Length: 503
Image (cartoon, rainbow, N blue to C red; front, side):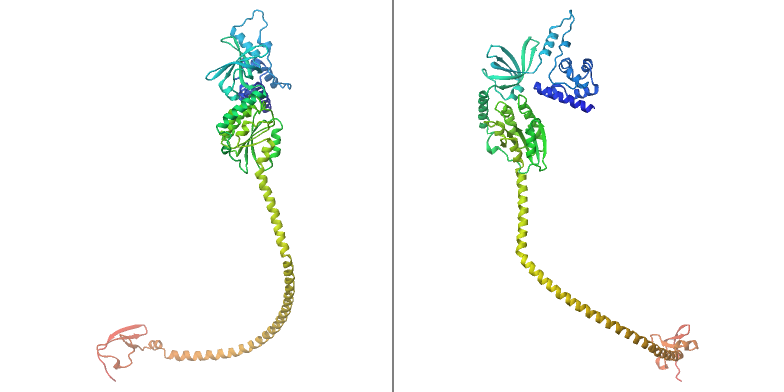
């Protein structure tokens, strides 16, 4: 609910600012609108309590705000002056001069566009005064303008020049004089506009702003596009429908493209995209006369285009003279549609190349296939014939294998029977041989046991050997004083020969 009300208030605020030729925040700030949504005022007293709304704005916009808050559908952005609240109906009510002038200023504070001839002009540091004269009856209107607004207009005011000034009237309280506070000026008549166009064109051309060598190329495959144009009208839809589906990321900046505030919007838009990572800035507008294209012949706009960090493309329709913005742009085309088509040319070309490459690959494959079709068919026939021979050979081999296996099976059965019969016979023969061998072993053990030295030792005998080794079997093997070793059943005895007797 609150979001819906805020959107309604923002739309009313933006429409009102557009009609008055001012920035939206000069009507009401976003913070003020948000507080209105929270408070939902239904009377002037409640409205005046909101920060950002003084008596002047309450008088000027109160009816519209309250109507939107209370749900009245037929709210317009025409400023409604509630005269019944300005003056008291009491007979004895009186006003100070300041109060009365404030009330008068509230009554006359309507945005207007006034046509007249410049009869005098006085430039100061930060502002200027000039007087407009009616060529028919000689009426005079004194005007005031800030230097920044004058510079933004891109028009050089001279005496005798017919202009249109846009702004609001105001009674200057210190002097009581009526002054028209101009926010923008523009030239009247195609001749004057043409003259100003040519003069500025020569000036900027001499500075090299239109020189071909200064221009940068647009990326062949742009991905991120910064688009500056009006959100209303068919131009943006024509651009989008002709842009192609190549995965673009398009960031849009809504800008007026005609009128005294258009140049300011264009400058803000170009500045906005300087901090954005875009491949190209695109400025588009439909066709129009030199009068309607004044914003695109603005010196500040042209200089902003040439100073842009990203390349700029202009797609601005025109009758005869090419807008100076297009001359300064890195790439210029005559329509928004042409701009969209040009951006997609690289992608379309790459897509066409892929299609051609695909067709060429298929054709080349078909040619190779046709060239080798006969060879493939002959090879297939040979392979088929060879396979037939191989099958026959395999069949014969399989038959021979079955026959051989059958023979092997028969032979194995025969061998099995023979082995079984021979095994029984061999078992009997080996049994007899083993018994006889066992008897022989027993006899040998007895013989060995009878001559075993250890057995003799157990019987009380001993074995005498030299100390250095060798059995002593005769007295001749030793000498008196020699060392001998006597081995008995449970150890050895070291002895020395004292005497020798020969038997």
